[in-house]
Length: 312
Image 1: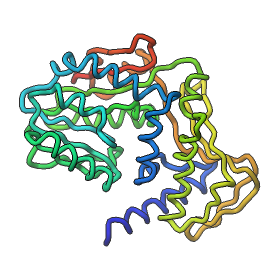
Image 2: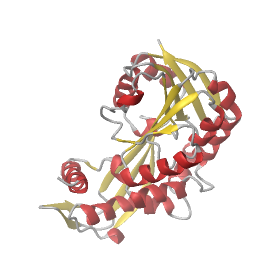
Image 3: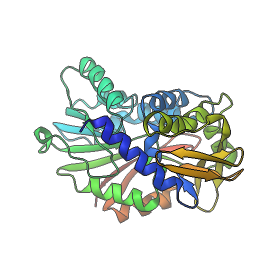
Image 4: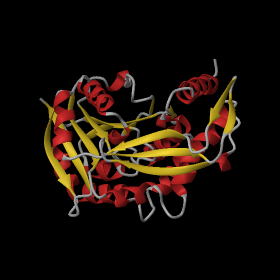
């Protein structure tokens, strides 16, 4: 069966499950089709969205120290690689690397990025891995014996529940030859800074969130009127997370595949969480998964951190 047909069926099944739940939700992994991936790259350049530029500053300022954790002839394995922009900082400094293995669910975007990197780093073996990192990731057999350093930037770990974050860290801990995990984490801070980062004045984050409904229309036989939903960012103090929602502007019924989904006015679809961490909560998830937090590198405003985990 065609890969796109399989993915469309998986998207529809996931959407129906989430939209028939109480409260309604959609899995955030479906954000990243070609349009969503391009919109997210725009988000990373917005003035309100501090995580990307702050993490870049940390990586650039500490790349030589990070290189000390990379064994000779290692493979750098990046989870949710996207455009691999931050990766180039590491590839330029990690002189002992043999391979770069980007892992992403967005196949077209991944392969285009990998092709460009192969051209720019001709001495490096670049092998894209199309996979959902929330499940088992099967790395290329040709690189199975290499020492491995995992790289998970962008605070994407924050999109996972604590239980799912621990499960992910545990799976990576079981990789053959894994010696370190370089992890980006967004830090707990004042709520207004956080809300501005997820509800920008230009409306790019709103377009990114609404693209999830547009994707359902394109690929999952849904009929959403995008103008009938509004983007909203909320700070959940109890769970220390930003939540993204799509709020129904009116009472309405929407067809999604064979199902009719009813919405009350003001009812929301919960589309994403972004958990924020401090040193205590980071140590907790690391230790539960068999890692030790070896070092934490922060910017001077304590907005963001890059942590290096090593096996216990």
